[in-house]
Length: 141
Image (cartoon, rainbow, N blue to C red; front, side, top):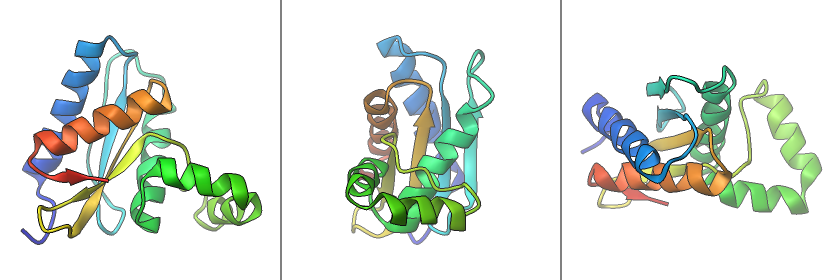
């Protein structure tokens, strides 16, 4: 497998939202990006605020762009805030270093894209993303 398919992206989202509902989380938005940062699929649940898609996309975009989870980016930002503010400005505001996005890799470890969520806490968002990726038979990191 050399790229993320639409079927995989949709399965990631469906699984993530199902997991969120089972846990009783607030309404979510989940966005799947390919390895170039382009939207592959997204859904915003009924009741999720208008900001959810943009926040989920910003988390996922930063993750795929930097090659690490948005949690790692958030930790790195604490030690170098000026650099991370510059990244946000340079990207036109698309870069959001907050927990809630993970990388999507194939079983061989090749980067396929990322998935970000918004609606719960950073931990909740990240957990449903990882669950969705693993439900699709892929690796999250």
